[in-house]
Image (cartoon, rainbow, N blue to C red; front, side, top):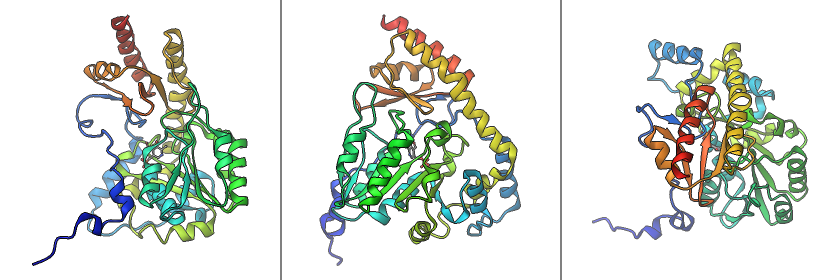
Length: 363
Ligand SMILES: Cc1ncc(COP(=O)(O)O)c(C=O)c1O
């Protein structure tokens, strides 16, 4: 008879010590919700993306493993870097995980300012890292620049800067980012710059610093503006010798063929223009209207460089909104906050009508 091993003999201690990241994703599809809870694009992708996917399914070949062809050229061209400076990933979650696996092992130190996107910490914990977590500061959740700088020393393996940060929306200025990257480079420490919300805040990117700093790794996603989070598409950008190393970790066919087909539609001008149009509507039409409303109604929100706001709101706000088929994201960290994505002009009209009603009721 086979002996049943105690769990602690099978699993590494860091795994036993951690918890799964459970995101409240179930039950969102199907119903006619206005989904302002996951910072997704609130409308479907450009029709050309859907046509390409439909054509691929029609043609068959689902029985074959993926074939990437000129995928890297198309993505590199979209980003504006060299083909050898990228590796496509299964969402940027996989990018974060691959970088962390490559640079961090049991007992290493990783700096991650908090609160932030859960998977950044999750990947570090899987590696058994000791996390140094300087908190964002004050009511405006200012980036803890001095604290991060003080912690960078040769005993650290990785610094994570999430810019703009989820859930606070806080950017990190280019100057501060470069100071961090430079200090980290001087003492042989890696920097992971999570640019998941890049298209909403392109002025903060550090992509142009790739050639200068061999310790810089950037993750991006196609979930937030292109409208394909269900297909799980992301990319890592770094110097080509780093990419060569990271490719040893990503499997040769991790990124699925439907994802490849959707991503390849970025070669069409109309798809690229559509992403720009969407971003423009969110940032320059909806966002000013929402922020004006918050200010006029004394709703406290953190200054955000992205397509969402972190509001100081009671938990009942979430329930109230859900009863009106609007999903927002209550947060336990920081307590008493709710994160609300910004949608199109039409979405904003619906959202503002509901929040007006909420204010009337709680008055
Ligand atoms: C800061 C940040 N990084 C990464 C991700 C993961 O994105 P993806 O869908 O590409 O895995 C998210 C998703 O919410 C995010 O907010």
